[in-house]
Image (cartoon, rainbow, N blue to C red; front, side, top):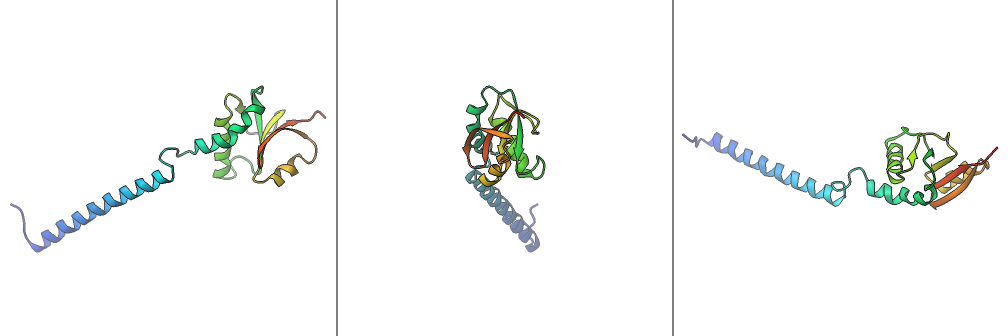
Length: 141
């Protein structure tokens, strides 16, 4: 038998409200994520490809290149993401995580930082497709 006591009706009403609230929250969260583009590209592959893909013409003859950046890989999640995006975008060239290569991808927060890194003359600029981003070749000593 179905109970019709006031306590039972209140419990059923509260349960119905919770179901509606959960459905509304799930739907609004799905719309938010979709609008931010995270559902389609949670690892921001397209963003990295657009930024680091501009390096491909300068790397077409290189098998393995190094990485020179504002901060070391692993210093923050953002630095890890930038290195990972670059690794993906410049395939088939392999991107190492060090500067021990003749050719390096330079990824700095600003052009001023990049200029400071190349000011000592140790590198020749092979390409500089966007602010803070370049392909550098070590000069013979």
